[in-house]
Length: 174
Image (cartoon, rainbow, N blue to C red; front, top):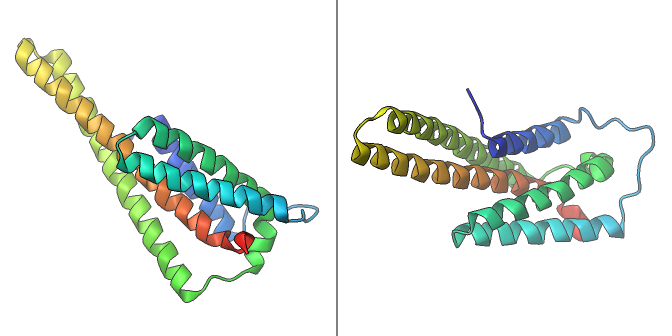
């Protein structure tokens, strides 16, 4: 199955989150100090994530995507530099439940995005193969709409994934 570039990025974010929670891939020779600078990064990442969600709700998809990427970059830094301290902190039962909900929502959004991308590709193919101009235009419009909706769903999946990162690193805000 062919994934769009953004779907691969979102999938990568989910993988990083899984690695963080599983505790693999984060072995380091020295433990970095997780301090006030990291709290600033955390607050910035959360602010960008909130802005991305608002932009997506307002149908500014490109801006939401850009903000999401920037937020993901900051959370990636936190995973690398504050992962050991985070692992020492256990999630509350409520946080664990919310984490599971967010993971399921993110996975569902990605599945829907992939389904829409596949459908859009099929409609584009039909559009190219159709000799009738009106029908070709109809298929092309439908493909464009489905492609745009797929992108929105991919962004939503990224937001759900990063909301888990926000919850996991909440200790930095205190």
